[in-house]
Length: 277
Image 1 (cartoon, rainbow, N blue to C red):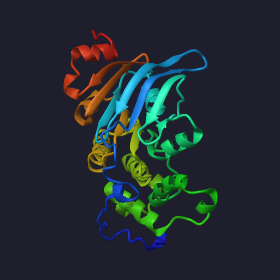
Image 2 (cartoon, rainbow, N blue to C red):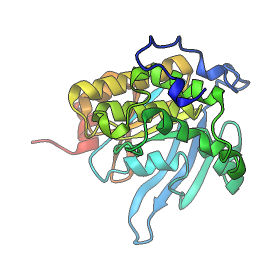
Image 3 (cartoon, rainbow, N blue to C red):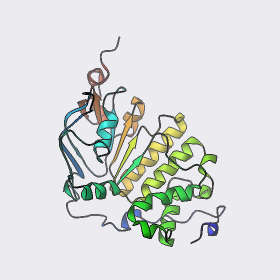
Image 4 (cartoon, one colour):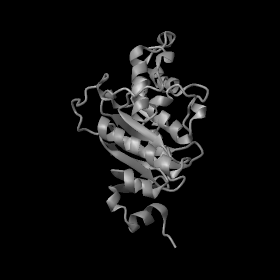
């Protein structure tokens, strides 16, 4: 399907279930945690302890919010889940691949882990559809990428844009979209990767409240419908309470709270942010 064959003004096509493309919707061992961290510690070369020894398990159909002040270790913990930050000590285990040690299994784990960034990381001069298709590059060899994307991949990318409400903007340059729309393109790009887990690093930090709620609603819907665990680092306490199934509170690289939003009481907030005057 050529790009110019997309009728932007036409009604959006019916969505098809992404999880049926190359994935068993209920694989064996689906009740097991998708990722386990055991004793994971991160110490930077300058001696800064970014993450104290941490044990953590992540399950399907769960929105987990990492909450805490700046420098608490949220981004370090988030990036440890796909080994963009390598632990100084401890192990990261995948449900499908076991302990992630060899570069080949780490690469495979990253291919199945989509990342959504605060600053979108889009190519502004390219249309939304092209940006979404970029997530497919990791699935092909260098020579295969020279051939271009298949019709099935283009249909997948269009369906992902449809799911985030941007089908009619498929051929719009990303630098002509609003900040909230660009972030939803980032989510569509993550979906087109056909991930088993989505990590979002402060995805609404630069958005207005309306756009923020729409982005977080989309992420929560994906988590529920596609059985994909979503881990989000946030600063906004009100969004954590509204959208999270589980909140992990950190301070000084240490987990001080781990539970549902209704257990996030004044004592827990004091543990995370310190005593308030």
